[in-house]
Length: 60
Image (cartoon, rainbow, N blue to C red; front, side, top):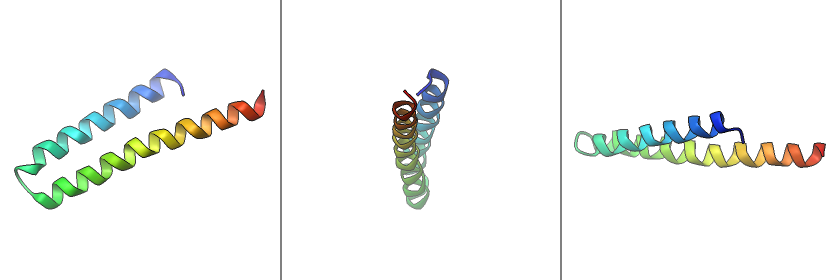
């Protein structure tokens, strides 16, 4: 995975984690929503990394 793409996933994940932490004190449902979005973003990063690695292995 390229460095800019990794940085994108890292920054967005940290922002979503921060939003989860802040929303805990305001609304539980909003906190749950942000937590699910955070997990999806982290999981999506792993999926993209695996697909890119698999594509590079098939080329070379």
